[in-house]
Length: 315
Image 1 (cartoon, helix red, strand yellow):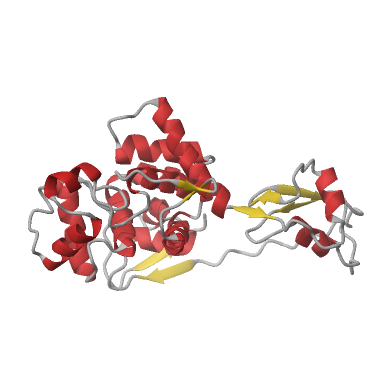
Image 2: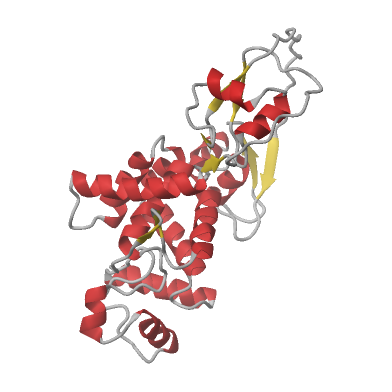
């Protein structure tokens, strides 16, 4: 593993674009910032988030550096990639069968062995095939530490599995959480404009990606300073995605509830290349919920064929 550094307190991988692209890719897979941050902290600890990273001890032993090793494997002038016991890539794949499958996946995709998008695809394939419980944890984790521990102890399984190392990797993950899941205010928020309609008392707003305290204040016609004071926000320049913000105002009149509509039965026709995992992800956002589809269709085995018509139950 490379010795890496921090720049201005933020982890540097040498490619901020790749770092953000990795975050976005994994958020598309898991939809949970805690899970993605916990996974990225572990990947950083293994490789610095460098997809062409060759283990330092292997560089000395084999006589290659990151770039020359990658080029030699791609050009097939080095033919011992599978059996050289050298950690490589984002997850520092080392065991022969995992490196074999990584190489097969790269060739199937027509990509370099060091391509980070190809490696992310292989990482997800590996997690879904052999670490289903950890995929569920990454999708539902309520903290970076919970997600980080699952990856370190079950997927990466380094020699050092001490609580100190668990804490260190979780802290690396929190750097990414704070960098990409936290929304910062400008230093001097603008004064809010006069509201068109006052906001009712007791309204609770959940912070979304891209929100700022001054922007929320403008939306509801409330000075950002009042929001900060009411919600005990010490630093108005820092709010987090998912944070609850109480909005002052007058209470709304209760509305008569609509009569619940009868749910429409959703049907899906299987096409070539479909999987139950992929169909569940399409309808529920989470592939691991595919047993709901199996149960609704009386399936004993997760086998589907083009032309099958599946009932998709509500969550």
